Length: 267
Image 1: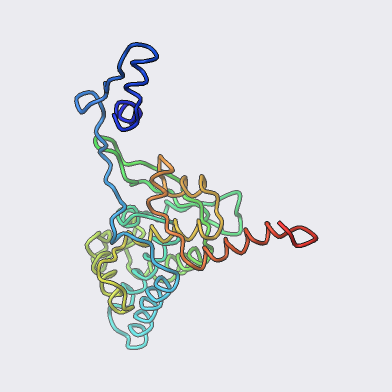
Image 2: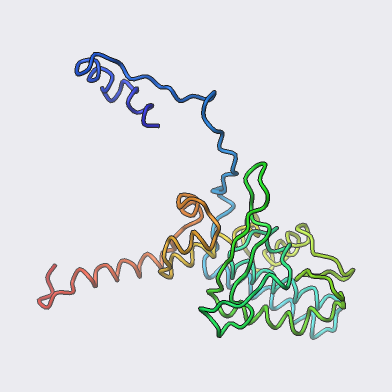
């Protein structure tokens, strides 16, 4: 990119170099000797963070479905509770769909820095997104939203045992005592997305975007958020981040408060 800038005649550096050193800069980086960016770009319009109101509407739709299924004693009560908890986990730890579907119960461990969270202080992701030709990337995601840990603890203690899966390690089990599929996750998300009145282009991945954006809005350190998300580069985290109007207003008021902090009320 630097050589592209220097060699661009619009900036005048070619003539300047000829005048100063008697040589012209040339572009030596081309498709034949540079690496191809193989990672998928995740900044698509439909992969945007949900506003806090949209997130609340989605989770309310999920919980309402669970309550209706329980009160009517329908067979799908356990599955509804499972899926509602799954989406809370996706948001609460900023997971991708496959990362969440492949979780085992043993992937959650204690965090010495947060003993009050018990055995749900860290989510150890084993199937993180990998670069082409590489194995899945692992990362440890610290629990920062205690309410999601509470929801998961209730699922593990009260609902998962009802599947009678024996020694199966999977966190999310089906009625046939197997691991939940990504397709099932998509289908349930679409069902509750419609019930909440949200746009049809939103996907499960929007919950991951929401996690990252909401942490930034709440003042979390950018490097911490990058590590939580498992991004190699801060620029990737930036693609996920959209700061809402309410957060911008809070930041504005905080900046003005610091600016007018003098005793005489002046800048």
